[in-house]
Amino acid sequence: MSQTVEKQKAMEEMYFKTFHKVVEGEIAKGKVVALNDKEAVVDIGFKSEGFIPLEEFRSLDELVVGTQVEVLVESVEDEEGHLVLSFGKAQKMKGWQKLGETINEGDFIDGRVVKQVKGGFIVDAEGIDAFLPMSLSAFKGVSNEQIMASKYKFQIAKLNRPRRNLILSRREVVQKEKEEVRDVLWGELKKGETRSGVVKGITDFGAFIDLGGVDGLLHITDMSWTRINHPSEIVKVGDKLDVLILDFDRAGSKVSLGLKQISDNPWKDIYEKYPPGTKTKGKIVNVMPYGVFVEVEKGIEGLLHSSEITWQKKMVNPQEMFKVGDEVEVQIINVDKDSKRISLSMKQLEANPWEEAANNYTAGTRVQGKVRGFTEYGAFVELDSGLEGMIHISDMSWTKKINHPQEVLQKGQDVEVVILAVDAENRKINLGLKQLQENPWPEIAQKFPVDSEMEAEVVLNSNFGVFVKLEEGVEALVYASEIEKEKAAALQPGDKLKVRIIKVDVEQMKIGVSAKV
Image (cartoon, rainbow, N blue to C red; front, side, top):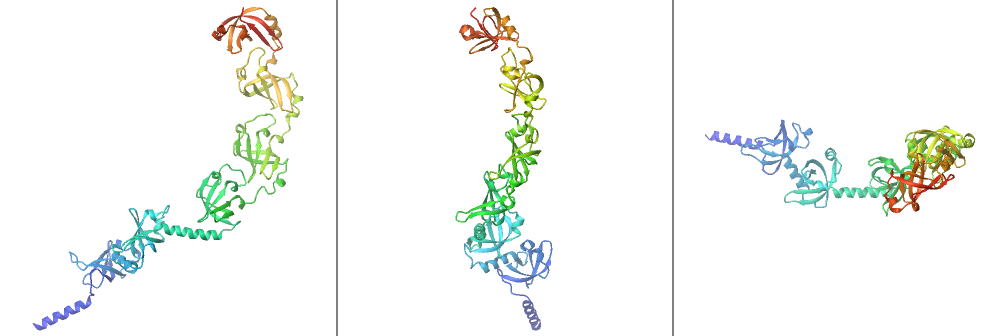
C-alpha cells in the first residue's frame, strides 16, 4: 500500500514539473500549435491549450504554426473547463506597461490607423489602442486605403490612465509640419527661379498657386503674352504647373508669380517680324461688334477693326461675317510694341474701288442693286461692284410722306435706282428711287390750283395738322390754324373732309389746304 502511494506522489511531481505556473491576469509566452479558419491554438505550457480568434491578430501573413506569441491569461478554466487567452489584450497591456507611465497630454506619439469606427478611427499607438476623433484627424480628401497604408505622428489630446483611455489628435501635428515646411520654403525662395505649384483657387484678377506650403498669386497680366478675359481661360483648379518667382515679401506673406515669363516674349522682335505692309495669315480667336481679334502667331494677336474689313461697306457687323476659328489673310497696318497692339486690315489687300467710283457711277445713271439694311432715315443698297449706297426716305416718293423706308422696300429686294451723287473721299453714294419717274409736281400744281375746293380723305391726325389724301399718291396738309380744334380732334383716318387749296409749293413738293370752307 505504501509503495502505491509513493509511486502516485512521484507521478504527480513529474506532472507539475512539466507544466509552467499559470497566473490569471498576467502575460505568458506561448507558441501557435495549430490554425483553423477562425482561431489560433496556442500552447503556453499549461495542461490544456488556449484558443484565440484570428481577428485579434493584425498581421495574419506572419501567423504560422510555430510562431511565438505573448498572450494574456484571462482564465485558467472557464465554465467549460477551457483555458482562456487573449493576444489583443496582451498587446494593450504591454503597450500601457511600456508607455503608460512616461506619456502625458501634449506629447507626440507614432501610430498607425487600423480601422474606422463611428466618429473617428482606432489607432495602434505603439501597442496601445487609441481613439482619433474625425474632427481632429486632418484627413480631409484622403481615402481610407491611403490612411491605413501609412504611419503618422499624433499628439496626445487626452489621457486617462486609470481607464486606459487615450485620445489623439493629428491637427496640431499637421499644422506644425506645415509651419516647418513653410519656414523651409521661405528660406529657399529666390527671385527668378522656377517652381512647381498647384492651382488652389481662381478669381477675376488671377489664380492662387500652392507652392508646397506657401501660396503665391499669379496675376492675370502675368499668365499669357496674349490678351485674355478671365484666368479660367488659362488655368483651372487642380492644375499642376511651373511658375516663375517674380517677387516675394515674407513679412507680408506675399509671393508674385509669372507664367508667361517662362517662355520667350513673342513681342521681343515684333518690329522686325511684322513691319507695316506685311501680309500674313492668322486665326480668329475672338469676335466683337467692333472687330475681330486675329492670332498671327502664338502669343501675338492683332485687331481687325470693322472699318478695315471691306471697302464696299462703311458699316459692317463682324459677328455676321466671321466666327472663332476662321482663318483669314490680313495686312499689318501698325505695330505698337509697348501697348502690345497690332492693327490689321483685309481691305488693304484689295484695290480701293472708291478710287474709280466717280468714273463708274455718274449722276443720273440707272443701276441695279439689292437692299441690304435700313436706318430710320433710309435704306442701304449694295450695287453690282460691291459698293454700298443709300436711298434717303425723301428720295423714295415724289408725293407720299414716308415715315420709315420699310414702308416701301424689303431687305433682300432687288431694286433699280438712280445715281444722285458720289463722294469717294467720304465713301458715300446717294441713290434715288423716285427719280426713276418724272417729277409729277408741275402737273399736280395745274391740277390743284389755289382756291379750288374738293372732298379729301383723312390719312393722319398729328399735333401740327391733319394729313389728307386728295387723290391716289397726292397728299396735303391741313394746317392747325386752318381747322377748328374740336373738329380736328374728332377726325379719324378714313374720315371725309371738305378742303380748299391755299398753297402749292412745286419746289418743296408740298400742298397746303384749309378746312375753313
